[in-house]
Length: 270
Image (cartoon, rainbow, N blue to C red; front, side, top):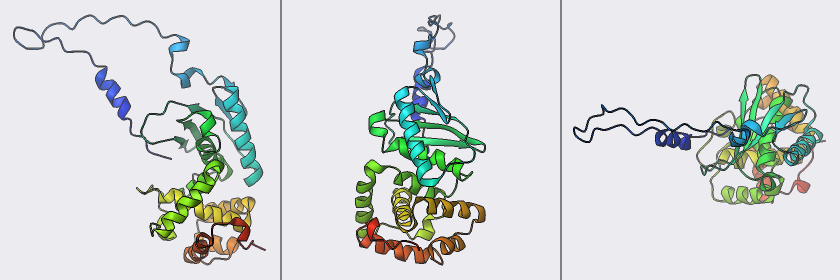
């Protein structure tokens, strides 16, 4: 989940304050403020879009149009086929809002009881195969695993769902790996906070990409379920993938990058 700094909100509050009634003779603020103009009552059309446009309710979410609803259903159906169906699901709102210029394309907000909302800051056409898939994957795995689990793997799965950007992500991974940008996996796993250079996204994507290549999507879902229950990365890695620890996984994963990140060439788990 990404942090949003509400700069725009602060500016709106500051700009919205009334001008002080300054006396032109003494310069003191003792004159009555000018009468406020009576603002017209808010109509349904004038309300914030995300307050009134949740006109489409489906079993798993509410949103603002049939087109968005159909896109969300397709993404969630695809996730269920890949990873399995969550046993419990609580419906949540999916909002499309105007981009605010802060570099954030979307976010998923959780509470202890479930997903509070999914927000996307771009148009539907560009969000399909990208941001919308990314954020719905966060929501999906919250319910599949009944947990807002490790951020490194969480972001890796969400990035992996961005099928339109998958090849460009692999190119970014190779470039950053070749430049020596990457951290050891032990430094990212369990960190549960974002780094300043997006390594948690790029390395997370690549590690998940490699693990799916080895065992498939249902296998990694079973691995994550076990990991959430035991909170023991080394034992869970060895049981599902044969790596005794993160260091062994890292060596195999680096070979995957050096060999071109081709899933077809990876030795499958037998």
